[in-house]
Length: 252
Image (cartoon, rainbow, N blue to C red; front, side, top):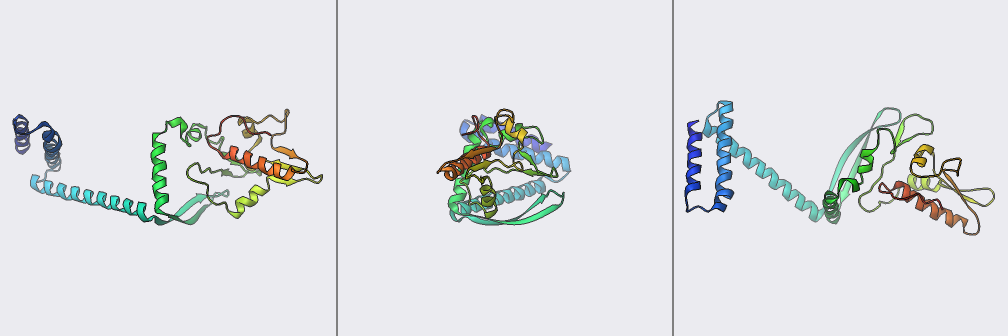
């Protein structure tokens, strides 16, 4: 307590010294004084020697500074040359079992810089414009959770709102191709699969009810039927998968 009292008196003397500027007092003397009082308080709580505790505090500060410098150097290296990271994702499948999948993520320096720029832009957005805002406002079990046709388990439809679209896998291309079907009379039909969107969910998104018009079927005929159906299917898919969709769905 006596040592702490001496530190306080010396700090008051520094503030009364006309040779020391206010900027120097605020930037140099005040932080040093705060560290001294914190060291005194901690040493009293642990009933430890003040000098020994001060030495431990200096070692801890030096270690924290070294960790910060290492993290900064690592971030600089990633911005310049990119990085490669392996991770294991654990998920619960429809049967309630845990499945582990090993993934490897590789980014170039330009991709790392672009990711940081997108992160800064997201911080500047108001909450209602963030891609995750609508998801957080939904009630549990509604909207984004798609029920399987058999009614067993759930499938979460994941949307990637950030960054450029990645190359689609063969399975995704195959699933997309099934949305356009050729009928026996030469017509082409666009179908929104029930395994992805239920009737109730489509009605909530602004689609007409069953009594007014079919919810998930659109037929095209004529010499350009196939191209028209594929173009409409692409437009409809982009609208459905856009988390920031606005306005009515493209029904024609």
